[in-house]
Length: 324
Ligand code: PMV
Image (cartoon, rainbow, N blue to C red):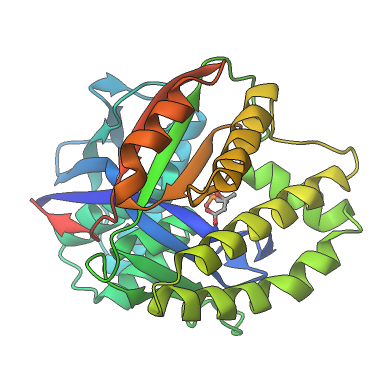
């Protein structure tokens, strides 16, 4: 009753921003991401008769509190599905080249879902696994698959039609993503709290809901056509619109810091100089920059020179979950 799985994180090009059902995590809009090879989590789950509670170790450290509650809550769902009542020892290793706030719930919950269901003897197909993973962390349901992935929001109240589907494999298109790690990061508003506050209070949220389905349809065509300029422009604009909703919330907030904006301006400046590069930002201050392989050296060097940038980590399109 032991299994090990590996999952990579993903970066949303069309953001998931808002839930229509919080307990089982149903989104208000369909969204799309690229799975990245640079950041992964390897998780081993071992169900054992002699345990009286779950034990969760992250990077070899025993974890208590909120982080372990989410993991245990997720295992409760797995136990219910399997009809088995056993506790587990969970060992998770985050393969992130730095400790600077890039540990991701996406790779974490995808690896946990894959390892725990296998260990307990459930045989789920990728769709069923995506539906289950979604209930741990929304963005994680996309990490079941490699390459370009759409999370279809679905319509049903039970969430049975809300899951990720592959749009194009990782070998379809070799584009690159530089994760720009900032040196000083303040305590952030979690994606969960940020989404809730925005959905409930931001008058800009309706605009977000109207525009995002159009962005999604257009970016899918651009990805299939390998149109980098179009893909980058839509991703950057969609990111700006998501972040604009937070400024309208009550109380207003932003995830951006001064270095975030310096990186954004440098990316736009690079474009003026003829280097096609585009940014996107999730629920935090760090920036991800999309570019083409032939511009790697120029883009990396430029980003590393920006005041307040600690590290630049480069990723290629990554693969979906695997069992080790
Ligand atoms: O699944 P969560 O709670 O990590 O939320 C992710 C939200 C964003 O990163 C901002 C957007 C996205 O689609 O990944």
